Amino acid sequence: MKDAFQQFFARYFDFKGRSNRGEFWWFMLDSIIIGIVLGIVDAALFGEVGQEFGVLGNIWSLAVFIPTIALTARRLHDIDKSGWWQLLLLLPVIGWIILIVWWCRVPDGPNRFG
Image 1: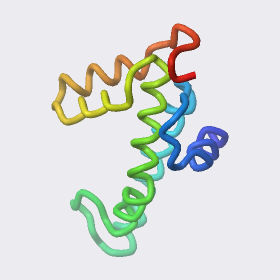
Image 2 (image 1 turned 30 degrees about the vertical axis):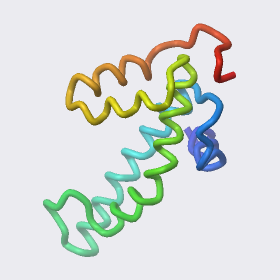
Image 3 (image 1 turned 135 degrees about the vertical axis):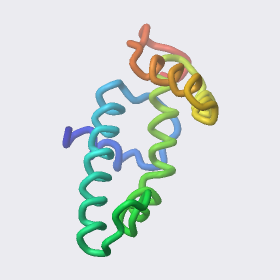
Image 4 (image 1 turned 30 degrees about the horizontal axis):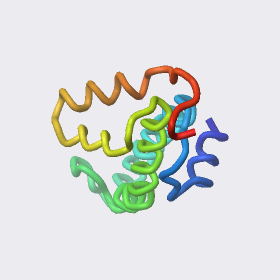
């Protein structure tokens, strides 16, 4: 878990190459846990219960926005898909389901992305 998080920040703006399932899913889990903790801290410090994101949550979201797009592109590269396929996230439900299935796929081996 710690390794995936460190690798994520080491490849912060790297849109090339591949990221395996472990790197992708461990970072997603870490990010959700950090978001929950920051939400609790926001509520305790600023009393912002019921809002989507508090101050700390917004800072976290901004800090990982572009790197998460890069990680998602690398994960799609791992299964021989273009990073542009993450635009499916703009299609509610159907696009999300397709991407989740793809993110769970095991790569077939070497491909055009490495």
